[in-house]
Image 1: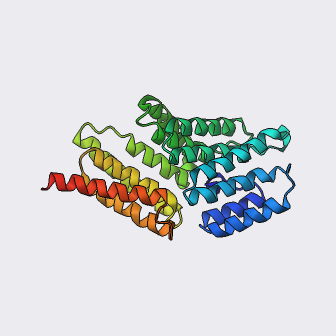
Image 2: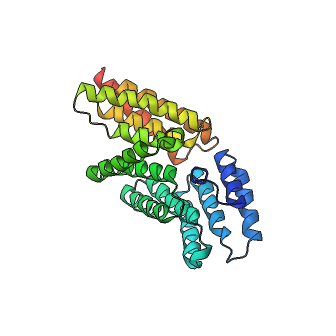
Image 3: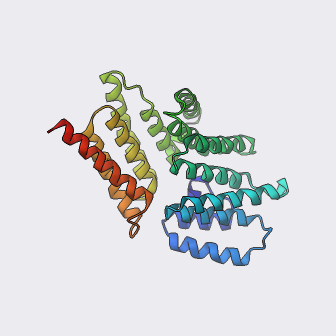
Amino acid sequence: MTARIGEFNALSSFGGLLLHRGEFENVRKFCEKMFRQLPDNHPDRAVVYNNWGCYHLHKGKYDEALGSYVIANTILHSLPPKYVDPAVQVMTYSNIGAVYDKMKNFPEAANYYILSIYICYESQDIDFKQVLRLYSLIALAMQEHDPGYARYCLNKAVQLVEKKEFLKKHSSYAWFLLSDAILQPRRTKNDRVSACQKFDDTIKKFTECLLRNHPDMIVAYRAIGDFYRSIGQYEQAKKQYESASKVCTAVHIGQPNHPDVSECKEKLNDIDKLIQQTNP
């Protein structure tokens, strides 16, 4: 998660690099070392707690991850404003939102993503890549709970892409493509064909921007699988769930009880039952 936000300083960029490379045991060692070295009131402890939360998130320990991010947020709110890096505040709110997303508390996830967007726009240098990703994540999170608001956020993302051509070169554009495809109308055959074409572009963009077997690919494949399942294309859904499961197995080696692993297995079992019911 940290690696998506950008570089804040030497400390956070190193921790973010370890996360981006999937070196989670080194993240753990790095955080433990920094906890020992940094004074209790040092602003960089907020960054370390964010990295610590990402470590727990990878392990599937969502409560521990949330607790770490909340501590980071508490540290930031205790500091004089001049010592608070807006990018770290954005990272913190975004990470809290990501945990709620994982826990299926989508309205709460959206609330924290919105807070991140507010901070982005209050910053002297607006990180439009981050804003695009956040609007896209809100659209995905709220597609069932509040379709109107999901569509509103997607439209905001569309406007950003139209105004900022450089966004198409960033991984945030992959999230935009995914949200645009998922929120695609499904009423007619042409609608569904259009969505499927967008999915091809989505996966291509994700693979261009992310490291092989990046955790975000699990989310993308599962979301696409859910779409195919919703329109009755169970075989296509199964292919996507299988791709998600393959990445999940690679990401969470030695973690058979990880929530992501369990969810992938559950989706595959459910889709197999649906296929059997339609092809007795």
